[in-house]
Each structure stands twice: as C-alpha cells, then as structure tokens.
Amino acid sequence: MLSTPITYALRALSTFYPIQKPLVFSGSGSTQKLADLILAAGQKKPLLVTDSFLLENDKLDSLLRHLQAHGCEVTIFKGSIPNPTFAEVEAGLKLSLEADCDSVLAIGGGSVIDVAKVIAGASTNHRSLSKLAGILKLKKGPLPFYAVPTTSGTGSEVTNTAVIADSKTHKKQFFVDPKYVPIAAALDPELLKTLPPHMTAAVGMDALTHAIEAYTSRNNFADTDRDAAMAIKLLFEYLPLAYEDGEDLKAREMVSQAAFLAGYAFTKSSLGYVHAISHQVSAHYDTPHGLANAVILPRVMRFNKSSCAKRYADLEVMLGGNVTADRDTLAERFTARVDQIAEQIGIPENLSDLQEKDFPKITKEALSEAWRSYAVPKVMRRKDVEAILHSVSNGQRDLAFA
Image: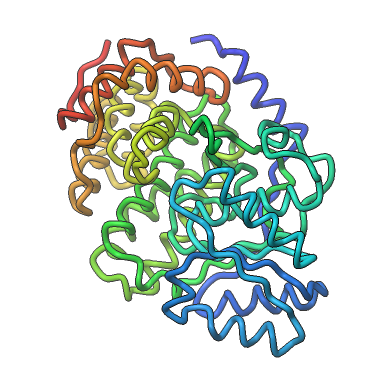
C-alpha cells in the first residue's frame, strides 16, 4: 500500500525534530537520585504534580523531607484525574504561577505526567490551552520538567505528547512538541509495589500496544524497531510476574523499562487504530485508557494481519517461535500469544459500557484521528471500526477481516 501524506509528514517531523530520550535513573532509590539532580540544577521552587494516593499513604514523605532539607520550597498539586481535562491543567497552572515555581516534577501515572507537561509548557508560554493544543505550539521552552512514572504503561516519561480533554467538548486534544520531553526520569520500582494487579495488567497492556503499534507503523526506524521489539520481549517475560507478585522488584523494574522503550518507539514512529479507537471510547465512557487499549488490541491486530504478517512472524521468532513454520503460521501464533497474555493477567474480553447509539460518532472521530496522526499499516473503513466496536461490546475477539 502506498504511504499516506501523514506518513511523509511524520517521517519529516521525526527527522527534523528528533526525539531525545531523557536521562534515566533506574532501580530502588532512583527517585532520590532524580531529586539530587533537581537540586544540583539549582531549582528551589518545584511544583510537585502527583495524586492523592501517594500523598495520603506517605509514599513521598522521604522525598519531600530530602528536598526541603536542601532548601526547596515545594508546592504540591494533586488535582489530577484518570482522564484529565483542561480544568485540571488550569488549576495546576494557577497554583504554579501564584507560587512562582521554577520547575515541575511529576510523580504518578500517565495522566499526572500529561497534566504536568502542559502546566510546564503553559507556565512559560502564557497562551490559552486551546492555542497550545496541536503540533509544535510551544514558542518558549517549558519550565524544567522531570518525571517519575508510577504505572509502567503510558511511557509519558519519554514522550513528546500529552493528551488532555477539552472540558467543554470532552474531545481529547493532543499537545505535541519535543520540548515536552522531560529532562530526566526515574524508573523506581519501590513506587510500583502497591499498584493493584488489575491496574498492573491494564497499563502493561498499554505498553504492549505502544510497542506493537510502533513496530508495525509504516514510519518505523531501526532504533524504534529495536526498542519496540525489546519492550515486547520484556513485557511477555515480566508482566505476568509483576501481575502475580507486585513485590517482585526486578519484574517491576523490567516492566518500567519496557514502558519507557515502547514510549520512545511510538513517539518517533507513531501509533495506530487501537489508540484512535480507544481515545474515543475513553472520552465517551471514561474508560481507563490502558484497559480500552488492552481490549481493543487483539481486534486491530487481526485487522492488520494481512499487512503485518512478516512483522508479526519476526516477533514470534524473537519470542522463541518455531522458525521452520511458514510466515502466516508464525503471525497467527504471535496474535495468539497476545490473546494468551491478556487472559493470563485478567483482561476482560469486552467493554460492557459501550452503546451502539454512540458507534457512528466514535467511528467518525477514530477515523479522523488516525488519518491526521498515524502511519497505519492498513487503512480502515467505517464498517471495519464498527465491526470492532460491536466485537468489543459483545466479547467476540476472533474477528475475520478481508
């Protein structure tokens, strides 16, 4: 299939505005190492964007004491919600400006990090959020920005993108600029131990979706192929272990590394129809993003199989598949592996909240998002998206596509 205009646009964007990976601290205690970097950089008035759970369960006490002991005046914003809107960003921005914050530190899941990114950008650019939404809209660099992910899935700690819903229209808006990539990130398994199994599963499948969509994008590069493939290998090995035992720090760290690698890969290459559809589902029903991705992924993989058989087969061989089997058999086995890991970690087969009356609008918005934003391997039509929505609603996973 010939590349669509968005493929050329994405390749140009990746070439002329290359994505830089942040400096990474990893392992137990890495959050304090990140704090030491902030102190060494001379930032004394950070805005800490986080969630209530971490604060109320004393997960950040030692970090706050450490910063305050070294003369930091920390302002805390805990207004983030799972699918954040402009209202949350505006509340955090108001707090940042009032306290004259000189940096932003995000500790939380993808939504927390996304909110913090836009606060950091809006703090220096002094424009409305509606005018900052879009591609390359930051005229000035954001406040120095640092991130500590606590969900191991979104990859927001390495991406150049934040997704925030317009409070009035509820439509998800994309804030895309290389300046949103954090200066540094900490992948600290100590902050992940209490992540419940169902959330571990959903965000882990979110990372797997990122990796698979990046690997099968028509805008792929050698480094994105390498990082996406490594993320897939790590997730198949360690995600079930992290799901079964949240105290397994090695598994937690490896899943975090996978989410980071997948985040970089999709930021440079692109995503696909799993995200195009799941973004609309989350906007309509407030479905957690990772869960929506996890349920939709197997359906889109089957749709893409005729165009992605070689890539799926290569991944199956990497994971230990029988190299003597033919390409289509290997591709089918890889698709089955995705079904199996989803079942192993308790991902449901359907999303019962979906309502057929919403399908036309969801379909239209999903197709529009994909056309504008993603170098998809195979183009969907309206009937394909609606077939996937019906299957997600009724639990029929094994769809047949031409």
